[in-house]
Amino acid sequence: MNNDIKFEELIEKLEDEVKKLESGNISLDEALLSFENAIGLVKQCNERLETAERRVRLLVESANGEVSDREFDINSDET
Image 1 (cartoon, rainbow, N blue to C red):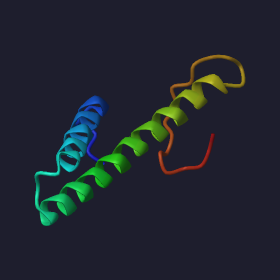
Image 2: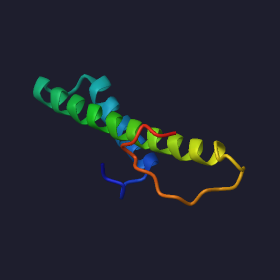
Image 3: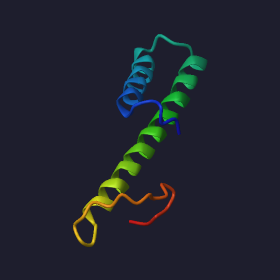
């Protein structure tokens, strides 16, 4: 996942791909490539949202109510 790109930029890129597909003015090969790009962007967005959700959960579920600055593994199922 490319963390250099902001979430909002990923959404804009996804919207651009959708507009291309909806226009109907592209070839089948271009449509397939655009669809493939869109799927990749959706996956990146979902990963970002899942990471944000885990971070929020760590803050909210802190046992003593204090904000924890501990690192967490984004691939972990730990809540």
